[in-house]
Image (cartoon, rainbow, N blue to C red):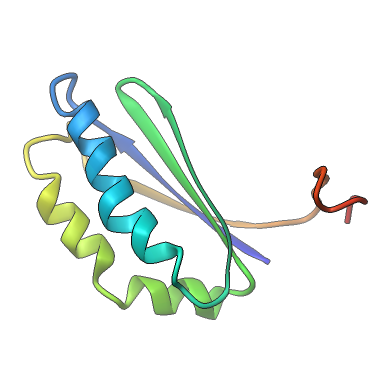
Length: 103
């Protein structure tokens, strides 16, 4: 599995609208994306963290090529104090109720 995160540092005034834009633009598109395992959006005003877990890196790269993040970035103009910060992660182990066992 492959996990990518994106941290958004919003202005105080742009936080609510910025989060709503993320949900409308990214979350809706991600639900239809091939290879998506899980998409999460965590908030601690004025910061948000998007976490996407994919079956493999290619699925994540293909999703990035759709232009969804360019659309989001354009929509977030004036609502961020800095550029979104991406990080890439490799899932080494997990446990969850739905998984039944760790891996």
